[in-house]
Length: 104
Image 1: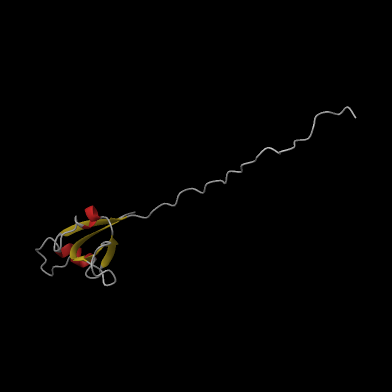
Image 2 (image 1 turned 90 degrees about the horizontal axis):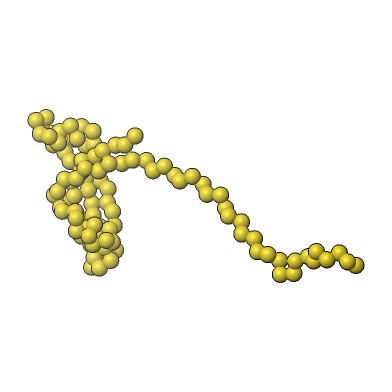
């Protein structure tokens, strides 16, 4: 099952611990909200009336894609863990294998 949310970017800039933004940017989102039942965001407001999430993004192409005050749809889907991988046992030949010579 997936859950979708409509959010607005409310901040895109340096983080509190990286004030220059040289390494990346803090991007923060909050759910859209509108109390007017005729507004398209009203139904979203009923499902997610408050909250926020933020990401520290180090990829310039990614953080530049988020504009402050722009609305975005976000889909949350559970991640299915990969199947366990059986360990591979590697054996090496003995340096001095037993001799097949039985002529003693």
